[in-house]
Image (tube, rainbow, N blue to C red; front, side, top):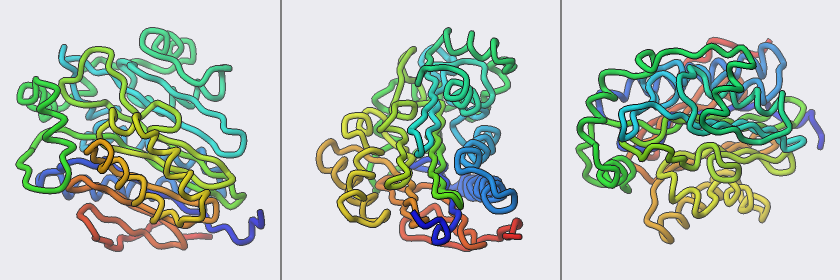
Length: 325
């Protein structure tokens, strides 16, 4: 690959779901902040795509507007169980955690799994024990839960109602509670791609339920030969079609990032009536993003330009504070 033709690029999503009016501004601001953080590493510091997606997702995990880290939703027992995955495209190294508790930044724990173990995924108590071994501090559940998510738990006690309300295809929907997954994809100046996805799951999910987010090929996938994908939406549907890997397959058949994203999500809708969204970047910096839910907060940074949106067919331009040096 000719690295001189590669433009460092990062694309962020803050979750595809029925985002209410009350969260529009916070969601747009949050994904822009994440894009800036990741782009600073790619361009301002000349860093790796892997470090960029981790930094971007950490910004989203620290933002209570999103369902990841701080801001995670509650399961049926009123507890917080979080999932995350991070992957790099050169050697396909991957780290993931599922069902972890009391961790402020699950994406950083997933990175430790990648870097410090021979495994791909750790779950539940084992993941928390590993966090302690790695010196990652654990926080009280109360520091991860917002009052809005407590109200959501009370309102959406039945799992099926939550799925129908949060992840319905576009149409009339008066939902005012709930959140969804966050994620990032990037390509750096060396042509290395990476992806990261993190979530608190679905409000009132069963104890121990794990969705698509930490599952390789479902919540995220990347390969330097093609590009990187992070997904969001109804986890059970995403797992059944291995959505992230399907997008890259379509790209391998010659489709652009955008066309591949649209085809894969259309297939999930046709096959399962499942709704969701994806962000995509090719190994040369070709951007794609698409969603079949009512809204998805997204942002991209490339060539010193920051774009973002939240409604269908909407592209706005923000201010990218970090310019290429």
